[in-house]
Amino acid sequence: MKFGWLKQIMPRGLYGRAALILILPVVTIQLVVSVVFIQRHFERVTRQMTASMLREIALVVDRVEAAPSLAAAQAVVDDLAEPLGLQVALPAEAPEDRITRDQRPFTDLTGIVVIDTIRAGVADLRAIDLSEGSRVKLLVDTPWGVARITFQRAWVSASNPHQLLVLMVVVSLLMTVIAFIFLRNQLRPIQRLARAADAFGKGQVVSYHPSGATEVRTAGAAFVDMRARIIRQIEQRTLMLSGISHDLRTPLTRLRLGLSMLPEEDETRDEIAAMERDVTEMGKLVDAFLDFAREGATAGEPERIDPCRLVARVVEDAERAGQQVALTACPGAGQIEITARPDAIRRALENLIGNAVRYGTRAEVSVVLSPKSVRILVEDDGPGIPPERREEALRPFARLDPSRNQDRGPGVGLGLSIAADVMRRHGGSLRLGESARLGGLSAELVLPR
Image (cartoon, rainbow, N blue to C red):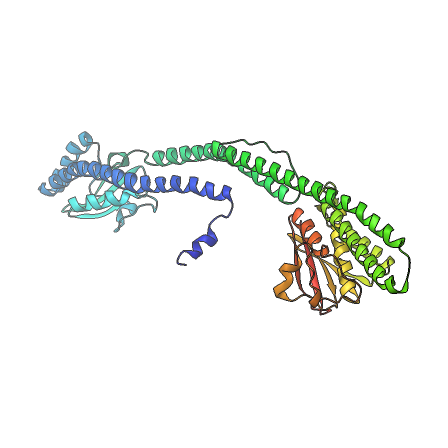
C-alpha cells in the first residue's frame, strides 16, 4: 500500500488518535493564520509605513544634494530634521558609521521589507542598520560626505507584532487543555466499557453501568444485555447437562445391578462381560458430562496466583499418582503472579498431563514467561496429532483414534475441550503443535499477565 508507512506512525490507541484529531486542526489554523495574516498583513502595513517615511527621507536627501556647499547642506538639515523628527549627522564620522552592508537581526522578519522598500527609493544608500531594534540608521552617500539619518523603528513597522503570536499561542494552549479535559471525560466511558468487555472475556464479571454520550450508552447497554444473555445461556447449558447426566445415573445403576445378578453360565459369560464394559463406558461418559457441565459453575473466583508454584504442585501430584511426568523449567518462581482461577487451571493441566501419559510413555512440563503472557507447555513422546486435525481435536467428545495410541484405554474426548474452555474463560488460548524435544504432541496453555 502507498500509505502503509503512515499507519505505522499513527497512534494506535483511541485517546492518541482523538488527541491527534484535536491538535492537528489547531496547529494547521495557527500555521495558516501565521502565513496569511502575519506575512501578508504585517508585510503590507510595514511597506506602507516605510513608503510614507521614505518620502521624508527622500526630501532631506534631495535638499542636501541640491545645496551649493557643506554649510548650506547642514543648514538644510537643521531646518528639516527637527520638524520631521529625524536625527541627521552630516558628515557622519563615528566609527560605527563605516559599515558598508545592511545589518538586521535574524529574527527581524519585517526588517526585510523595510530594507527592500528604502533601497528602492534611495539611490545613493550605502547601508541600513537595524541591529539596535528600536531605531533605524541609514547611511547615505552625498556630495558632502556620508549622511547618517536615524529615526524610530516604530515609524516603519507595526508596533509589537509578536503580541498577536503570543496571544494566539496562549489562547490555543488554553483551548487545547480545555478540549483535552472534555476529551478525557468523553473517552472514559469507552475505556470503562473496554475494561468490562476484556474482563468478561477472561471470565470475570465486573460492575459496569452505561454512561457518557448517547452512542456510548447505547453500546454499553447492548454489552450489558449481551453479557446477561451469555451468562443465562451458560447457566442453562450447565443445568441441562447436569440434569441429563444425573438422570442417566439411575438407569445405569439398574443396568449394572441387573448384570451382576445374571447367572454366570459359560455361553453367556462373554456377553455379560461385554455388556458390563459398555455400562462402564457409559458411566465414564456420564461423569465426563458432569465434569464438563460443572466446569464453568464451580471454577471459583479469580485470585492472584504464582503460576510456577501451581504447576509444580500439579506435577508433584501426578508423580505421586504414578504418572511419568517431570517439570523441566519454571523460571521466576515466587516472583510472578497472575490473576486466574487456580482450580480451573489445575484441572486443565491435569487433563493435558493425563492425555500425555495416556498416549505416550512420559511427559515433560515447562513454564515460559514473557512480558504479556505465561505459557505452560506439556510435551509427550506419543504419536502426536496431525496438523490438519488439531482444530478438530479441540471440539467436545472428539476422538482421534487412528492417530493416537489406544493401548491404555480410550478417553471420552473432553480433556482438550475442557482445557481450551478454561483458557477461553481466562482470555487465553490452547495451542497444539509438535514437540521439538520429545517428538510427540506439544500442548501449550497461554495465559495473559
